[in-house]
Amino acid sequence: MPYSSLLPSTGQFSLFSLARLAAFTLAFTGALTSCSDDDETPTTPANPAKITVPQAALSPEGVQYDEANKRFLVSSRTKGQIGTVKDDSTYAVLADNAQLISTIGLNLDAGRNRVLVAVSDAGGNSSRTSAATLRKLAAVASFNATTGALISYTDLGSKAATYTQHFANDIAVDGQGNAYITDSFAPVIYKLDLQGNATVFLENAEFSGGGGFGLNGIVYHPDGYLLVAKTSDGSLYKVLLSNPVLFTKVAVSQSLTGADGLLLFDPQTLLLVSGGQSTVFRLTTTNNWTSAAESGKFATGAVSPTTITRRTPADAYVLYPFQATSPRFAITKVGF
Image 1 (cartoon, rainbow, N blue to C red):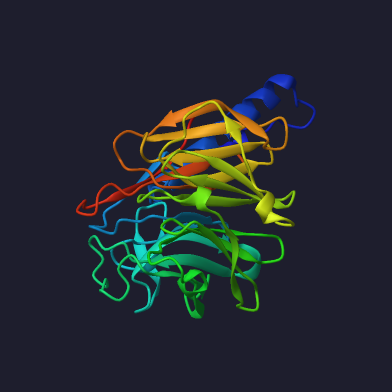
Image 2 (cartoon, rainbow, N blue to C red):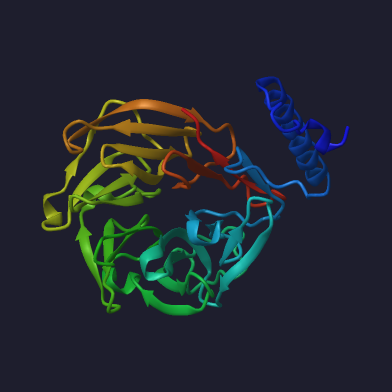
């Protein structure tokens, strides 16, 4: 039927005619949309439930979501690089350097357009390991988040030279740009300021892992303190930036043994990944992290989860590195 036949003659415009015209317009528009969709390439769903990346033996330890470039950043324990992951599962190298033996925790300081990475050498399958660095290396490197160009590389372990073993693990950045880095083999937290000055921020025997992993995940709370997790016994610490020696242990009834990466979801909510328990715990507080209680948990299965990142105000994604010999790894949306 010609479109013009739906138009009423002068003086005959009725509600019935208007209804016929509206119905035809909807049908015609829908037909055009359908034809257009047939010619388009299907797109990846927004915020996919799981992104499986076909990269063999990458063994990523750290993950951050880069909102500006719509991609994830991942480290590599085995290849010592920083890579990017798109929602369509494509992987690309963002930064690489001979000094990066194993890249562990990441922190994307988006406001300063830099990505910081903890650098260590625990041996294993790293192709760059050596007797000079094996279980002795703790460093932090900073790269331009857009280009991947190296900004700085700072040795940290020499600041705590009384300890023979080191493993820089995770990084938090405060509002002034100071970075705080955990050492899992020595009971210390390092501080690196924007001018490149590295110091031991806090040292205490309580942070020792007793031959295993001690301090691990670390986050900055906007009220002026750090929350830090200890892998060996699941302790969670609150460390004041103004007076770190007065640190306290957060009272939590839930066992957090195997604690790894942390994400402060909001001032009262902390997401904690336990690789040893294959679980992401949601912890909440009502007293400024004097104590906390479990308010949800997400079982990952036997995929060796390491850490977690926020993608949207409502969504967090956990990293599944699988094993070093696996031909893939995954980044999965958390649901409680």
